[in-house]
Amino acid sequence: MTPAKSASDRLGALFAAIDASDTERFLSFLTAEASFRFGSAPAVSGTEAIRAAVGGFFTTIGGCRHSIARTVMEGDVIICEGDVTYTRLDSSQITLPFTDIFEMSGELISTYKIYMDIGPLYN
Image (cartoon, helix red, strand yellow):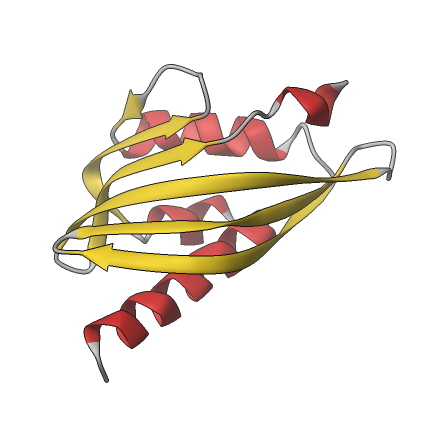
């Protein structure tokens, strides 16, 4: 399997965990010391802080579904862009674009940055 194919498969599994609102499975893709930043929110670091941030976010939505349009690898950095369709708690839906940057440590993510405007989800 090529590194690009392996990374693409791994990202598919990561986004499946997110789309299932499975915080523990999501955490299994990150190093114990990982840094995580979602949009303009301050970065959080470490398993417990990320668990609280991600688990808390999942309680504010009814669900989500990611569609990846493009993935680029450069050394130990993976960049992906796509759209995420959120289901709000009132069952309405909104689709928003995102770009994620992953800094890898072996097969695990050491830095995860999500670039998107999450504001429309809550408007």
